[in-house]
Length: 130
Image (cartoon, rainbow, N blue to C red; front, side, top):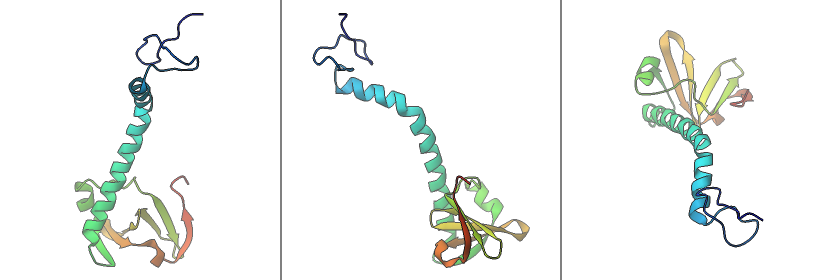
């Protein structure tokens, strides 16, 4: 029977017959390399969601709601396409949320920023996947 080799470094493996790696370092290196592309995508999405939330939080401060120029938010790195969920109100308005901070597009390029979607009378909660 031929000697088994490590999946990472290709050294001959000693020990159990079902062993796939020569040591923990090789196992970790193999799994980190295998999962790195998925992790990078998730990291990028989470970074954009966090940035959006921080920008909304900074503008809202202690206010309950505030109107802000959409262009101002965009110049600070806000990305309209990244949000955690949406809420459709009874009035037919769609609020986009980054965690507990939300925004509604209103007239003249303004966004209405709000906090805590529990105060909104919601008709239907839409997932990020819908």
